[in-house]
Length: 75
Image (cartoon, rainbow, N blue to C red; front, top):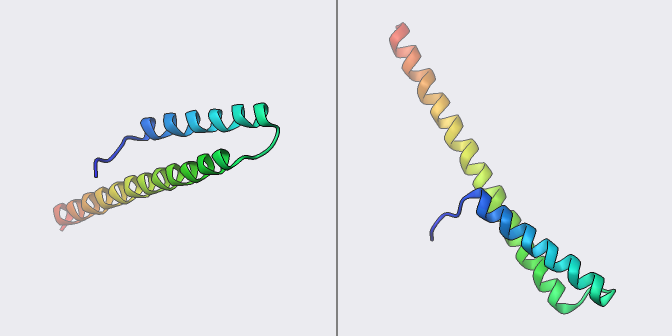
């Protein structure tokens, strides 16, 4: 699976949100198509959260490596 960058995921999310809003304005109610859009939005949000968690983990890991390097220099 190719990791998509955050900007691409956000753009897809915004597009789906806009589509959902437009359909609601046209239909005046929630339709089955809109429920599918909501499902896709949940998947995109989960991907964004996963990406943020990975970024945070990498930043923490880098920090731990830097601390270990500093400790080894100081010793």
